[in-house]
Amino acid sequence: MQGVVTMRGFSDHVAWHGGRPGWRRLWHAVIGGVVTLALVSSAGGTGGTANGTENSRANSTANGGTNGTENSTANSAANGVMSGTTNSRANRTVNGVMNSTANSTANGVTTSTAPTTDTTTDTTTDTTTDTTTDTTTAQIARGAYLAKAADCAGCHTAPPRVTHPGAAPTATPAFAGGLGMVSPFGTIYSSNITPDPRSGIGRYSYDDFARAVREGVVPGGKRLYPAMPYPSFAKIDDADLHALYAYFMHGVQPVAAPAPATRLPFPFNQRWALAVWNWAFAPSGPFKPEPTRDAQWNRGAYLAQSLGHCGACHTPRGAAYQERGYSEADPLFLTGGTNDHWFAPNLTGDPGSGLGRHSAADIAAFLKHGHGGGLIAFGSMVQVVEDSTQYLSDADLAALAAYLKSLPPRAPSGHFNERSRAARQSVQALKTGDVERPGAGLYAAYCARCHQTDGAGVPQKYPRLAGNPAVLSASSTSLVRLLVEGGRSPRTEHGPEPRKMPSFADQLSDSEMAHVLTFIRNTWGNAAAPVTTRDVSSVRGALHK
View 1 (cartoon, rainbow, N blue to C red):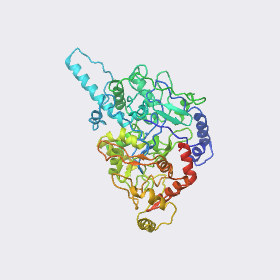
View 2: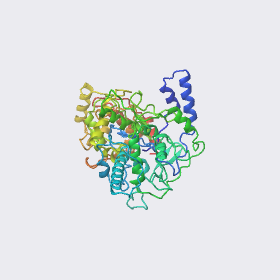
View 3: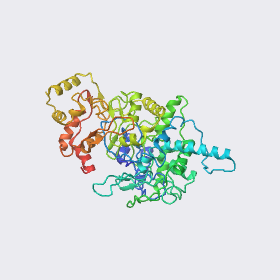
View 4: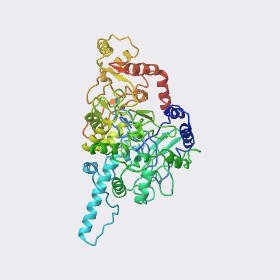
C-alpha cells in the first residue's frame, strides 16, 4: 500500500473521452477540476488505517508498482529492465508474526469462513477456551498472510534510519507509519496502523476498521486520500477483512509513536471534496465472481483487483487522480500508468509492451523471485516483490498469472520481431563493431558487458533488452530514471543474489542518454518511439539529478 501519484493533467483527462462533446465530457471535466483542488488534502494524523499516503511505487511492478498510501504498488506481474528504487523493508518479521507463520496459511486462504472477531477467551470451560484460542490463532495467521498480499508494510513502515554519519541503518517498527511520500503539493506521511490506542488504530472497532479500509473514512468522519487504495479494498470480502482486523489488533506489536503530521497548504488541506470524489469515481461493493470463469481465474481476479490493488500503479489516472478502470471490463484497466516518475507497464496481452509473449509460468516466477522470462523487477516493483509477492502461495501466484494472461491486448505499443532482417543486421554489426547508428557506440561501451551485444542479457543476473516490454513501453520514463539513478534487482528468500545497475548521471549527457535509449528501443528486433533529449531533461529535472 503506498506511493505518490503523478498528476497526468486535465488535457489528458479530456483525451480519455476522445474529446467528445456533450454532458458526459463536461461533467467529468467539472468533477475533475473541482475535486483536484482538495484531493490531496493533508494525510497526517494518527487516526487512519492507511492514511492515503500517496503512491509512489509504481510501480512500477514490474514494473511496478500497488498504495494505501497509494503505492499501489500494484502487486502486479510486470516486466522489468533492471532494478530501481531499493526501498525494501528491513523488518521481515512483521511485528511478532514471522513470515513463516504467514506463509503457512497460504493455501486455504480462499475457503475459510469469516470467524468472529471477538477475541475474548471464555474460561468457564476448557473446551470453549481451547476452541476460541485455536480460531483466533488461525485467523491472525491468515490475516498476516493477507497483509503481505496487500503489502501494507510497504507504505506504513518508515525506511531504516541512520542516526549519525557512518552508522549502520536501524530498522524502524513495522506498521508504525512515517514514510514520507513526495507529492506535487507537499510531503504526505503514512499513518501508524499498529494497535496502539493513541498513536495507532487500537480503539477501532471492526466496523471502524472496515469503513476505513473500504470507504476511506476513519472514526470522526475524517476522509482519507484516494492514494489509500480503498476503491480497490472495497472489494475485499468479509472473511478476509475480519482476518486482517484480527491480525492488526492481536498480531502486531503496538507502537506508541505518532507518525509525523502532514501539513499541506490551502486548499489542499481541505477534505470536503473527497466526498464528491468518492461519489463520482470510487466503486463500492465486494468482488463478484464471474460465473463463466473457473475458480482459479476468479481467485486471480480477486487478488489483482482487491488486496493486490494492481491498478493503483498499472492503470492510468485521470485529472482527479481516479483510476480509469477497476476490472477487466474497463478498457484502460492495467494498461500502464506513471507514478512518481516510474512507468508501471502494460499488463494486458499486448505482444509488444504487455505480457502477450510471456507465459503464466514466467509471470509467477517474476512475482516469486523478481526474475521471470528474462525480465527482472526494477523500480518500485523491487519492494513489492521483496515485501509482498514473494510470500504468496504457489496457488495464489498461479491464479494471478492465469488472470493476467486472460486479459486481451489493449493499448498496444511497440513491436518485437527477432527474425526480422533489421534484427539480424544489428546483432551482427554489434558483434563485429561495425556500427554507425547514434547510440551504438555508447551501448557497446557502457551496456554490452551486462546486457550483451545481442541484448539477451544473462539469465538470473541481468535482464534482456531485446523484446523487453518495459523497453517497448509507450513511456520511456522508467528507462530514463534507471540510467539516471541506477538500481538493483530484488533480494528474495529463494531467488538469485541481487545485482546492481550503476547510475550514469555523471557519465552521460541528456543527449547521450537519449541516443543510447533510442538505440536500445530500436535494435535486435525492437521497434518503439525514439527518446528525445527533452524526454531525458524532463525526468532529470523532476528528479533534481
